[in-house]
Image (cartoon, rainbow, N blue to C red; front, side, top):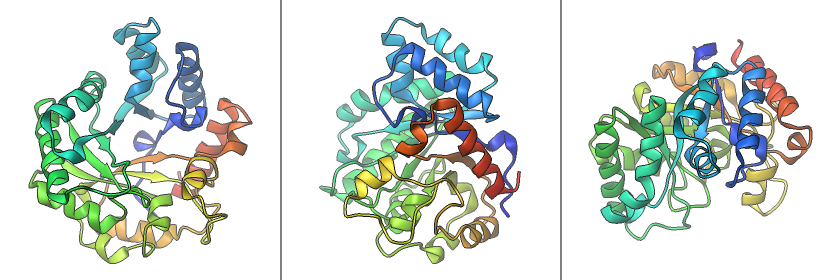
Length: 282
């Protein structure tokens, strides 16, 4: 059983609106209150949701107070995009706002992803992520990369090489259990066993059947993830290796599921919280 604690259990609350990128201030208030009502200690915040609420008329301070007044911390912010080109002007334009939001909340780490199906240059991606790591360090932040199986950063081995090649200490990984199961070649315990525990910044908890329900992996990941413990992820094996390497991550359930979404944010958050606590033994 992992050494998870309630204070390290946060909700990826974008799931409560189905991963919508546009959000109103009232919707943000609703999912913040649902998260707090389900007993989570904090949120994994999509920076664009903070920025959208500000664009809708709230101040930065008011959006931050919405979370703090509900007793919610923000230890991780998502997501850094566009860095894989290595072009510093593009990175500054697309990522500075996300880093600034994370610094405002006093986050520990900021997640980055690649969305394209391939990388033009792995070396350029390393350069871009290293540049982000330096900009993050100036703000007292770490950064972590999440692999997505359908992209140019498809698996743990590739993501770990990218982290290593930056040469920076504040750069780490997200391990998402759904991506862990669906990555090419399947779960990779041997590579995970080689990674120092402090490099695992966050573990995102969700589940999936061993065999995909269809051919559309994007549809599954955004609409049909299962509650943690309800699928075929071998959590016992995953947790054993995380304990072995001394990982002490942020634990963040991320369950995109349209059937749960139909129940409303309060009930969805409650069910995610109950399943996650059962899995973690909390």
